[in-house]
Image 1 (spheres, one colour):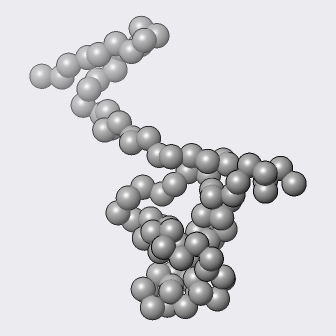
Image 2 (cartoon, rainbow, N blue to C red; image 1 turned 90 degrees about the horizontal axis):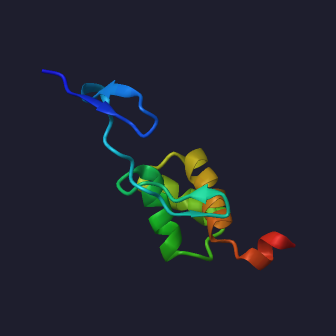
Amino acid sequence: MVHYYSDEVGQFYSGANTKAPATERERRNGVARPRAGGLCASVWAWLDKHPDAKLADVRAAAEKNEWNVNNATCELYAWRKFNASAEASAS
């Protein structure tokens, strides 16, 4: 038996094809923190422990932890933007 539900606009839909609600992710400076458990989140966890890391440090950590080096590099820049202060981004 399929149950039908009504949304706030009055549209009906089947509950069979609905996805689990997405968890809210923290957003700062237009960047969302990665969901826990993924490789991006592990790069961010490493960056949280090494806030003064340079690109060479991230590349070395990527090779050591078997992360994709290019992805780890992109995550570094997203992490920096996420953690940038309002004053630094205004200038």
